[in-house]
Length: 210
Image (tube, rainbow, N blue to C red; front, side, top):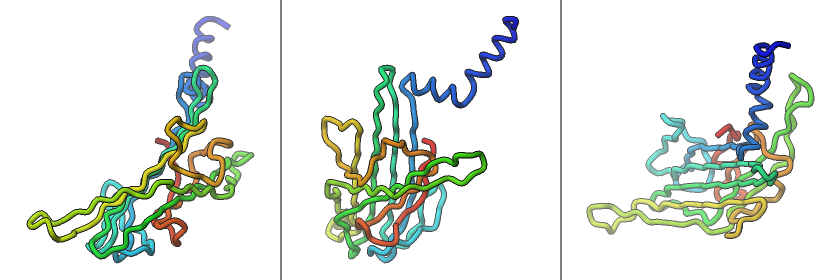
């Protein structure tokens, strides 16, 4: 094989998705996924109701609705020493109108997906993994600008993360299963519940490439 043909073959191999993935992992890259969705909770209460999608993926809510947004991020990376680190983080933000219920808890389910064993086959979904925010939410009351006396809404934020191996600062998410082995893949299902375990979910979707 002459040098020109060898160079073309080598370039094709290096450009293949599998080889690019291996190069990415070796250089500190890896799997990076995210889920983000806006939602409405009708009447400022707790029962979940899907919002009407607006521009930018946001949700249009009625004035009496609680408006929210949920975000889940997942990454698994292997460094040049062969050490694999997994991180799962999540955030749920709410804007609860005056008179609405401020939830004290929130959680979310991740249903891992296993690719089909043969081309064209159907994927397999494993048992859902439930992740609960350890810390209570942070809250901030918003009053009218004119007098500063009338409560308009309460901003609520749940925030947490889980690292494998554990981080030095400690985890602020508790999950019922292992999110590192097997690693979560694109297409894994996400369901968010406010308050924790309340049905139906306020937001549902899939993990996508970051």
